[in-house]
Image (cartoon, rainbow, N blue to C red):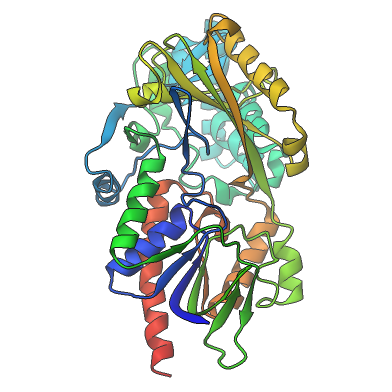
Length: 454
C-alpha cells in the first residue's frame, strides 16, 4: 500500500488548485484521485465538428481581487481574451440590460414607472423600519427590490433556475452573489442615464481555446511539481487505518492508498465514501443535501449571432434559463461566419434530467432560440449536442445550514478537509476557489506538521 501525505478526492477546479498550492509550498507526495478519465470537473471543453463547447456550462474569469485575477490569468500565459460585459435579460421580446434594475430605461413607460415606484416605496419603508426583516431568499428579493422588479424578473428567473420554492433558500445564498443596487443608480437607469451594476464582473476574461485550458494548465504545473493524478479511479470508501488514527485508507477499485491527510472535493451528499468516518446521524443528514442537476445543450450555427455574451430567460415558455454565446467569448469556438452557444436547462431532480429525451430537448432549445430571434431558422443549426451533470448548483436550504458545521468539525478532527463547490457545498466562483485553496493550504500544512510531531 502506497502512502501519501495528501490525498485529494476529486480532480475538479478545487482539487487541482489545492494540489497546485500545496506542491508550490513544498508539500510532497500529493495525489489527486479522479473517477473520470480526465480532470477539470465542470471546466470541460469539447469539440463537435468545427465547434467548441464548454460542456459544463458557462464559466468566465473575473474577480474583485486583482492579485487572484492576475494569478488565474498567468496560468493561461496570455492566451486569453479580455471583454467588457454585454449581458442581457430577455423580457417580453426585449433584450434588457443586465442587471434588470440597470435596464429599466428600456422597458415601456408604464412598466418602468411600476418598477421605480415599488422600489422607492420599498426603500422608504425599509429605512423607516416598517418592513419585516427577510428570513429567506423570496422575502429578501421583495425586501430589497420591491414587488414589481421581483415579479417581473427576479422571482420567475430564480424559480426557473432552482426548481424549488424560493422560501426554502436561506439568505446564505445572497451574500456576494445577487446585486444589491444603489437607489440612485436605479433612478438614473429608469430615466435613461447609463449605469453599470455588478461591477466586479463588468470586465471578464476567457481562454482562447475554451475554459478547459485553465484546468489543463493547472494539471501540467501539478505534474511538473511532482504531483500525481490517478484517472478512472473512483474512490470506494475512506476508512480509518487500524494501525494509526492519524492515517486514512482510501479504497480504490484496484488498489488502496494510505493518506496522512485527505482533501475531499467530491459531492458531499454522496455519503458512500464517508460512511466509515462520520456518525450515522450526520450521514443521514448529509445524504439529504440537495443540488440542482443540469443539462447543457451545445448548438453550432452557420450564421453570426447578436454581439451578446450571455442572456437570462425568466419566461416560463422557454426551456433554458441561460444562454452563453461562446463565439462572442473567443472566435476559436466556431468557424468563420458561424456561432457556438450553450443553453443551460436545470431540472428538479436527477431522474427527470436523465429521462429527458435528447432530441426533444434539442428541439425545445432551438425553438426557444428562434422565438427569441437569436436564430432566423432551424436550418441555421449545423450541430447540436446534450451533456448532463448530476450536480451543478448546490442548494442553500436550512438543512445545509444546520448540518455543514457538524460534518465539517467531525471530519477535520480526523484530518479530512471539505473543499470546493461540492465538497464544502458552497456555490463558489472560480476566483473564490483559488482563494479558498490558498487558505486551505495553510491549514493542511499546519495539520501535517502537528501530526508529525505527535
